[in-house]
Amino acid sequence: MAQCDKCGKELDEGDAFCHACGAPAAGSGAAAARETDAAAATAAPARPAPPAAAGTTARPAPPYGGRPSGESPREIAERRVSQKLELWWHLGSYLIINLFLVIIWAITGRGYPWFVWVMIGWGVGVVFHLMHYLINVSGEPRRERLIQRELERLRGGEGPAGEPPGEG
View 1: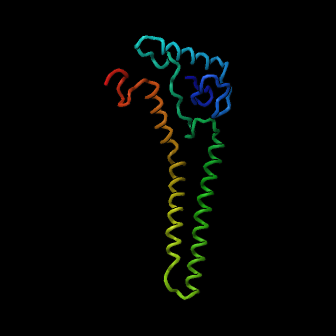
View 2: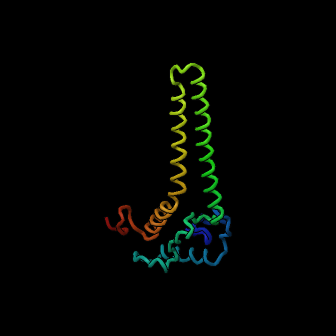
């Protein structure tokens, strides 16, 4: 299967452009060479071709720790700042509104501390938002390494348990 020269995403046969980054796919020399190499590899005997000859070497992860989906470092930084600001807004609104609820409770007679249930319920949402932020921002390089490792395994023709095809 052909891959985009710009972002490395797999392309369906007959695609004129990459659906992930919009780069032209059909008619480019590198894409045609990859398709020819892939066709030759499938028609060849069971002997596996070296990865460099097949033209399917894994793309290295971008040096800025982003995803190889065509995003520039600025776009990645903007997305991360947006996520960070959303988290701060969520935390700020949680604190302000719950403080307001505690004040209402205190002014109205200090009976049963009903505000605790609101704090717990909303607190679960804040914790999930924090986990989402930490996994998406802090986990990007780790996620990218896992994706690259899996792509190398798939391109190398390894079986499900890591053994070469035909053994097992």
